[in-house]
Image: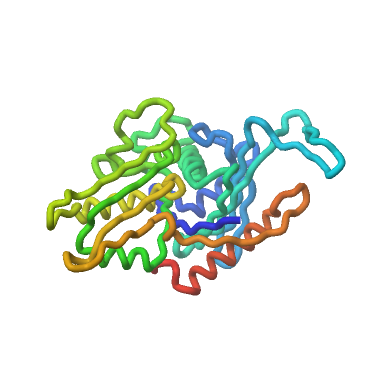
Length: 295
């Protein structure tokens, strides 16, 4: 199981703790809300030693799995009326710092979807009459990926930025609120042809001696890359310390804080929720104790 580090920032009047408590107190059938992640719900919530452990679930749409044995052909898995296959994703959050360990589930809810769900839930909690908010930015949470400290240090050493190249998953990127009028937000707010799945953006200074990209602009893009998280397929910033030094690259996807954990499949060929939470807890504690998470 792949685990990534993220950091959450509160936007509106409710903390993530208050929102999750509000969700957990509702009957499970009343934990879905209109929005991009309308089928998702908070499945389970626990708290322990300053950590919040949450699990989110969504139905698996389309063609489902079957079952088989070495001497038995594939057959359908019997489902009761009203049931569907489902995928779930968990996170463990440190209440004090806002850092979280997030489970990557390729077939299940990803960070962009969970972020959308939390926005819709926060809006429902703040506007129970269903009215459209005058200021949508007053709800939800900013959740960004976390880079290794060495990556930030290398970027800060660059006195000259020469190029930035980013490949984005457009549906995932459009689900993230970026500042318009700056950096990648301007590009993504422009009209795009229907059906666009990926977008590659390359900014490069001219070959003229002394030419470089604006540091403020590059740092703005770097901030957007962090906010976009798993919607970024690749992102490389090229620069150097000064005119006399060698050019270097910082791969902002490879430099994300992450770890791989090995879990044993349980009943129903699934990873048990408690096992996932424990693996996420250990990853978060390890990152914290080894100084990987910026203070």
